[in-house]
Every structure is written in structure tokens, then in C-alpha cells.
Length: 304
Length: 304
Image (cartoon, rainbow over all chains, first blue to last red; front, top):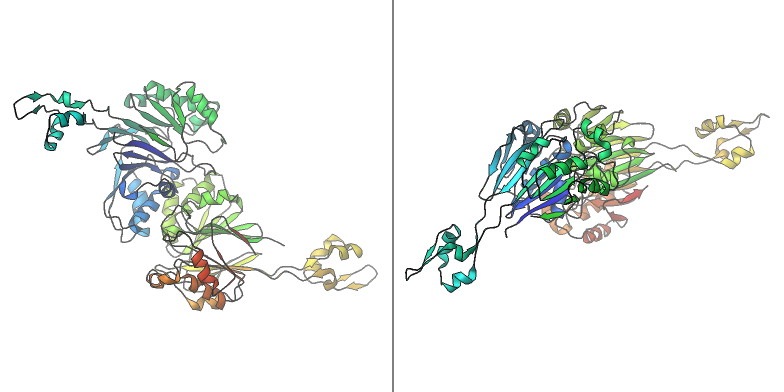
């Protein structure tokens, strides 16, 4: 099965702590890496997780707060020192070009590759990127500044070939892709072998959604139905719901409610306030509503 | 004895590694903190070393390369979140205002305090700051972009009071400062006690110089005579001297030669190229010329 996994590089909040790095994760979809958010020190965490810079093609920024963005320029600079030649795409709210381009001009003269900056409308749910493996959609969120989450949807996969059957019928390799695409195979003697006898059904496509930072916003569940993994911020405990509202963040129970109402398979909560020394009680609050919840932690890898 | 100590927060080079953070150190002079260089993730290292943000008044930047500068905006942002009210001073080569101010305007609206940016001429040796404890001088260096080191010179200290003598002569507390400043004490019966009998000589003032990044530049030794601690970059081993010249960096032996010719008391080498898994052979090369050399490492504290 081709890879679809999420590595948490940092799950802290705006204030640095000894325990957490700032927000960033890397989504590996079929060995292509998509970064979502990029706090200061993300490149260090990226290296520590033995991820490959040359597999990183896209950085998606949710909003222009430093704890989600200050690491971008360091990565751009490092990639140039490493002699990268392929484009790097940086996506984020309108204003990202003005925030990033002057820094590139000052600190990265003679950049060895091109940085393509894509300002996005954070208020609509739309597909903003696709390649042959994945589609990426924005999820409108509500925070103190324009902010959107991102939904990564794997494209439908091809069925699995039954090697034994291929060998039994002595089917040439050149036909295998056609069979995967649903064509029956006609033997030299004219016998037709339906492709369903030569394959097992494709794995269902997988999906990952990242929703941070946001106040509790139940209407986003319409975009998240059946998502395999939902990362939703839970900056505060339920006891701090008023603070959550005031700072446009969510509580553990609110994150779990979004997961439950989205019929998600799994929930990961993160973006923890620096006031908590131990987030396990946030986990308990979330699990009371949505049992299949895990706490984000640095270097956690979740395979879908 | 009042504190004068240097904490190494990061001693790596431009490329991030698993082993090192980027360049930054904090000089504690009588409980006031002066930061020199500020790579990405410096604020994390600052916290890990249990340093106090409210004792940090000045950040001195040697040159506008990202691996010495990208951490400044994160610290400025964090200080505002913490509700700082006192000014923060940021010093660095001409151009630092243009590199930093727009980032502050975009990412720190409603900053709770004032950031005073001081562009410096890196080509001259001059005193750029003083308070009652310290004088800070620039040291002209030569790198691919304008660059200066910094010399921190403690101001002459006052002599130590001999408590036993004070008690023996029943001298009032109000006179102690005068005695420290060199005034003799006249007893009620008219006897004059010379201040030298009431004190022991002051500790000699201490000094710390930071020279990075730079090609080997022997003329700087005129500014460094007798320095207590010299931090000099040793990006490369002696075998890579040609690379050192090409990239405007120094070798281990060159750093040691500067220390020897400055009659420094101690040398700390750092800014290690990411190509080295183990810097001990750089240490050996330096110690062959200047025995009292140590390797920089993260979280190393050197007390003067």
C-alpha cells in the first residue's frame, strides 16, 4: 500500500516552551512531502525526523501568525544552500507574498530555484492543488486573522494485481496497467479473463484534514465527512472555554465534537496552550466525546 | 564577584544539522543579558537554558545572513505576547532596519513595547553602547556581506570591602560606598583610616570578544589584546583552508593564531561546518597553537 502518513514536527502554541516546538506537520503522500504550517525551527525538526528536503514540494500556511510561519524563510534559504533546482510552492492567505518575498530578496540573493507563492482566499472551500495522487482543498476557519485549514484527499487508487493469476495465465507485463484500469484480458486462444478475476479491489482513498487555528466552527464538518484523520486544534481545556472564544481557539471537547460530527476515523488534537504541563486531561475530555483521539506530540507519525 | 558569563545557545553553521543549533550566545554581565547573533530557534534554546527574557535588553547581530538573524523576529513576537514594556535594542549592519521593521509591522501589530533598531558601520572599531557595567565595541570583520564582531568590556570594578575591618572600626553603612570609591575614613576621634586598609583591590575587569563570521584577519588582534575569552569561528579544519578562503571563513589554526597573537586568556571555537560529525580534531588543531582552547557546544556556560 502506498504511503500516506502524517509526521507531527511541532504541536505547541504561540509561546515557546521547553516541551513543544511550534506548529508544523509533514504529510507524506506516495513519497511526496507536503508541509502544513511552518513555525520557527521547523527545518531542524524536519531534519531530526530524517525527512528528505528534495521530496518537499509544497508548504501550506494556514494563517500569517509567526508561530505558523516564521520557519518558512529558513527552509527557503537552506534549500538554496543545498543547491535545489525544482520549484518550491508556498500557499497561504492573501498577504503571504508581501510577508515572504522581501525576505527572500534580502536573505537569498541568487536563489538556486524558484519560489512560487500562491495567495489563497481563506473564506471558501475549494480545491487549490492537485496532482496524480492527491487533491488539496481549503477549509474556511475563523481566527483573529484570515485562516484556512487544509484537506488532503488521496485520488482513487488502482486495484491490486493478483500475481498468481497473472502467472497462471502467462499474461505479459505490458497488459498489467490496462488490467488495473479495468480492461479484461483476452488470451491468445480467445478466452476472455475478466479483470475482476485478475485483481482485488483498490484500497479506499484516504484523507487528512488539518484545522488550526480556529474558534469552534461546526459548519466545517460538511467538508470533513468520513475523513480518516482529523487534526484539530485544542488549545484549551473545557474549563477555559471563555478564553477559547476570546482568543478564537477551540477546547478539547469542541475538537472532539467536530470529529464526531464529521464521522472521522481518528482525531489528533494539538496546538496546546503553554499553560499546560501535561495534556492528558485534554485527551480525556476529547475522548469522552470521541474515543479514537490521540494527543499530538513532536515526532509522532500517524499512518493512514 | 559579579556575574560575567557566556552561554552558547548554538554553534552550528548555515546548514541545519541534527547536532547543532544556529549561531547565538548570551552574555550575562551583572545579570543583564546581551544576545549576540540570533539564528532560528534561538528563543527555544534561550528558554531551555532557563534564561530570563526580562533581563534581555540588547541583541547584537554580526551580519545579515539568515543563520545569524532569522530568530530575531520570533523573539520580538514572543516578548510582545509576554506583555513586555521596556525597549528592546537590536544592533547590526546597515540594512537591518529594512530587514526587520517590515516583519515587525506585519507580524506584531500592537507591539507592547518599542524595538529600537541601531544600524552600525561594520568597518570601524568603535564603542557603540555603554552602561554603568559594560562597554560594547564593534570589531571589523571580513565576510561575504558587511560583518562585525563585538567586544564586551566590563567597566572597572570597585574594590571589595573588608567586613571585619568595617565592624572593627564601627564604620556606618552610609560610608561604605565612599570608601569603595577611594575615600579614607575619619573616625569620630579624628583618626584617619586609609581606604586601602578597609578594602582589597577590585577584581580586574573582564572582557569577551565574539568574532564570526570572518576570513582570517590578523589585524583584529589589535582590538583583542588581553581579552579574557575570545570566541572565534573555526568553520573549517586546516585541511580545508582553501574552502575557508573561498567562503570567507576561518580554520581552527587561524582562530588559534588570532587568540595567541591577542594574548587571550581562553579561546572558544565554533560555527562548525555541517560536514563534521565530530569536531575534536578541530580542537586538536587549535590547541597545537593555543592550548587553552575549548569547543563550543550548545548550552555550554563559560564563566569569566
